Image (cartoon, rainbow, N blue to C red; front, top):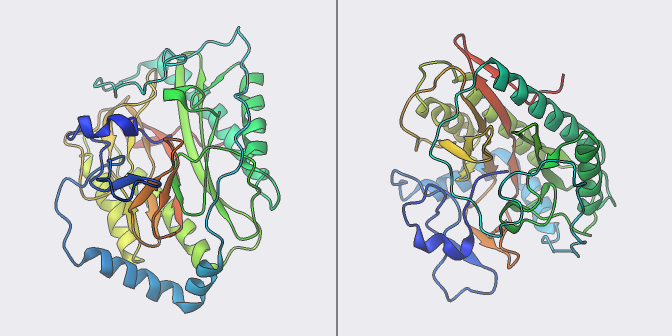
Length: 352
């Protein structure tokens, strides 16, 4: 689950690393856009948005564009009641508090015991995500996926980290088609040709494991398949930059270079440190804008690039969470939790 701050409070924190320059609520077109996502730290060239959209269109061809225009805009369904968690399962400290916690400034560095606990949490998250992916079929609702994820997590004695985080009402994020991030599971049925990012985080034995993947539903057109493939490649290239002593800027540089080869834009959501705390420093950028400093062995954080076929500007639905591309452009995201080692990096959220 990508880090963020409450939309209602974002204008109070102009320097927040999770603020974006242009973001508005649905129905508030006349209002200034309240920020949600990460603002670039360096100015973009004026011609860059048009160049990106043009190159993406050239790479995908006119047929892909026509297919996307025929797709119905994403519409919300009915959100079911919040699912219960047995009392014996430990909760994170933020559960029961409606405000989103501040991002912890501490950078978590683990010893042998805490690394093992991180492994347990991350392996469970990976297994849950793998199971959720098998459910992605036409006519399945995102609420069906949430139900299955919730049950699998509590059956393992863990807590679904998104549930109750800043008031988030469900146990998993399901972001379909032009939903860039933080989609709330509901009664909408998946359609043939959809893509869906499923973002799973579990809290097990005092540690969070966080991972996501974009899945294809039914018969998906080739241009969309390419977007999903390149997004996963970008994540893996970002991971390949990780090692003790490496600069954090290498992650965003490798992701940006690969995305630009295909003309995709990068949505400015960010990765984050994770462990005992759900969201903490360091902030992991997927663009050339970067978090200063160097990686340290024993550090854990997420790498989670989100690529778009078009503009990165979004509208925020009035649920306070669902971020949807204003131009209807499809987005894809992949995420792993990684551990920096003396010799390189270990992906903790790979299925065993």
